[in-house]
Length: 497
Image 1 (cartoon, rainbow, N blue to C red):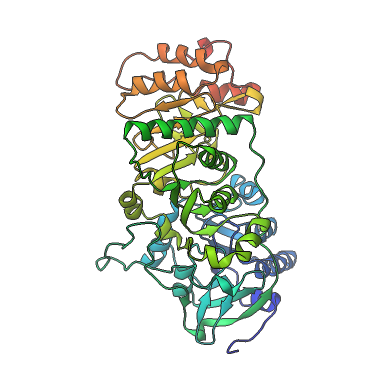
Image 2 (image 1 turned 60 degrees about the horizontal axis):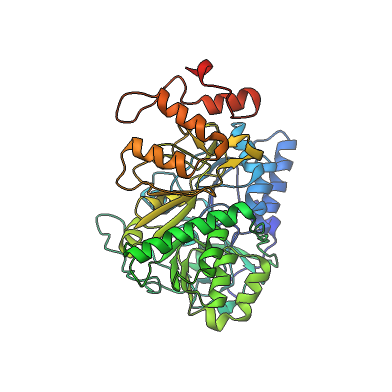
């Protein structure tokens, strides 16, 4: 082999205070695991000696405990982008102990190439295999690994023996040219292959290889419960009605589905529906529910950035790799999330909201407008360019102490102009071609929980005048009441008006 085998500790020694690190992988899938544990230990030792030690972190999306967990607990991250979902990282961010800027996932790679965000000193890439001439075969996740390999001064490879080199042919590595030389991305159906099965780098950039044998450790999502099942049922029935009316082509359209329990529940319902034909997916991540549909044949093909599946399901894929190599493509995030391709393919997009207001604005990221939860991820990439954009959430949380439908969202991630459909377990509001008042009426009547429905009607009556009627004194009454008493339910609006 042309490269030195090094320990994780030696690899970490090449990383210095103030360096920016670019990581391969997307979500937990394909993220490096060993070097960051050693790096966190080194940071703790430096801090104990009274010396500063923090690094910048660029990732494809969220990661897992190996990166965001270990490094956050060691207080070793100076800045972080583009997306996170780990409790320890979230804690540092909300205490302002970590700089975090939230960006659309499709934007990060090109912003790095344009030079807007500084240089990448070290790239850490998990690989299933690497050749002597610098061909890197990735594993279950791609993310922005091609950009990291291109821009990083030096690269550390984690060769994970839980990945299999039989994945060769499943990846499609393509990087668009920068302006003014950029051309169209020639993807006209999810199964089109346009790039290389491997990443090619200069072998001189590779510091060494760290041998690992660690799984991604993705836990299965919670079983579908009554609420998520009803949300899935409502979305499925709505799509079936659109199909019958001819608003969706009879061949159906490719689907994009976000991450989480609600997304899995919706996919499960689509799989069970006899009215929804078999379909393809063009999405960020393939989860357990999507793979179950592939095992059943309901999902014919999936283009994705990562196999964000449980260890059991990943083993099942590897055991049937000859079949799934021809039914799954793994691409970089700037391609899976690219607005041009999303618009061309006519995706039906399904994402999750933390809260929605009565006019259709969506908050995906901040609790009560201030505390970061997860980040916007790729939801905006898809929503703004969808054939049909759907947001879903339970109508209440915390046993009814929180209403997900509020007079005005406390933080806006997706404006009313991008949101076509809103669904809860109560029902579905079709917001297309409706004025603000008509949207409010549809959302209150169809999506709000009965506990809060009358309060929302009362708010709308208080908000007289204007194209989008609001009572600015009362607009955050639900949030203020929750902060005051721990329960959004108001006795009346009087004290907020």
